[in-house]
Length: 283
Image (tube, rainbow, N blue to C red; front, top):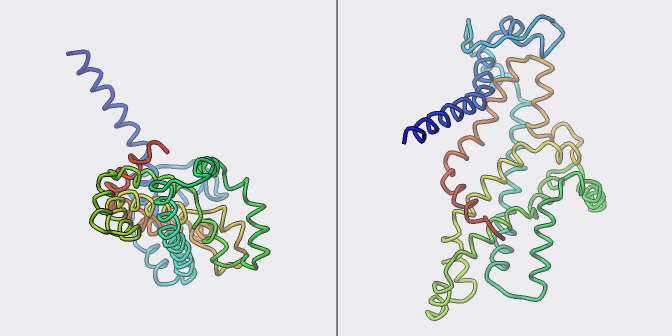
């Protein structure tokens, strides 16, 4: 019993240390966003510019100020344009996936048809292919469709991602067959079963797809960097590195505000995310 207690204490200590290490970058981000220019140079100047010296860590700013947030929210129209671009791209991908992935996953989970096993294997293969493998072919296809340097260049490939189908198919497959059969006996058609039974019972998987897809494309770098050339179309993920070259404290404030939509969405749907991922343990 004592060995178990000691081991439990050691594990809690290890987890506490890991938690501190994971939270520390966020704490530094919040602290630096409240610093003035001179204090930023003292703490981060050696890392972010050519001021020399050593980088320092301060848990609290000596002279806290909200000047960076005021400047960002009132004097940086470019930031709001980039914020809108990120919202359009992430929202477009999520909306498209809710249509295509839900229907495809329902078909894979509830219907038998020729080539189903091969299609499953194809989805599994697409899951392990990184963006770099399909980048050139995707670029050529989008160029032939005259979609390069538009929102659709990023949105369309994301709509047909394999990961949402992977997650949702297991959520729909977990619906008991008896429920489907009872609905058919009551006279419900295929579409009625999908809308009234499949979608409500598969809600955890759908919410998990919404959260994961939003987080992925809200922070996407490679796709916008490859397919977008016009500066006014670029999202926050490409705009923030440009801000670091200017006023660093404003860049820290912009990073905090950029995190808020993703963090709020994650905490609102955390339970559904866990259930949806748990249901996708096999495919």
